[in-house]
Image (tube, rainbow, N blue to C red; front, side, top):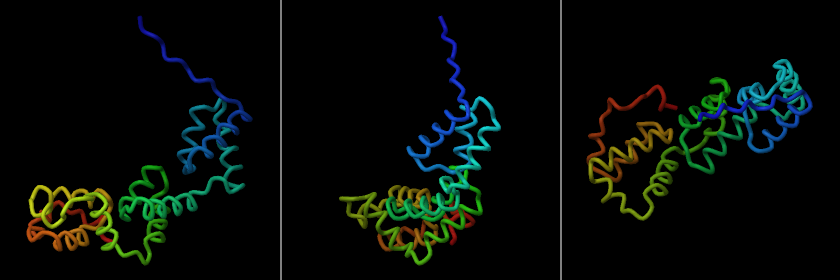
Length: 182
């Protein structure tokens, strides 16, 4: 016997305001993320625009501030590269221009080489990097990890060359310069 999916209770304006406040208290969100969540719960779609307008006017929802704080957090707490921060912001439905500007501001004056060194030390803790990266498969894996973390390919190769003589052999065709330069 198959159960039918239960339809969520749709919320009126006051309940929707409470839901929006709870959602924002639980986790910072972009205005588009919040709009999507509210639309799923709203009894009337026009209530969503009214609530978002109020939240923006009150300063509770501000994509520029959200993107700036998110970029700083990803850089400082997680040691991610600029390209990864931009990708993550865009996946959180922040406008590309806002995401790029926030990442640029967060990474101004940041030494990417030092960030890459710290990232490798953290990810390969307890391993002798020179010995570990002397194997081609480990070197390629480390390079892919750095690229996924949002670091520029040029700087990634520069750091990897310090540890492995075969770093020059990393397939240059796997680099996407449009995403990594900056």
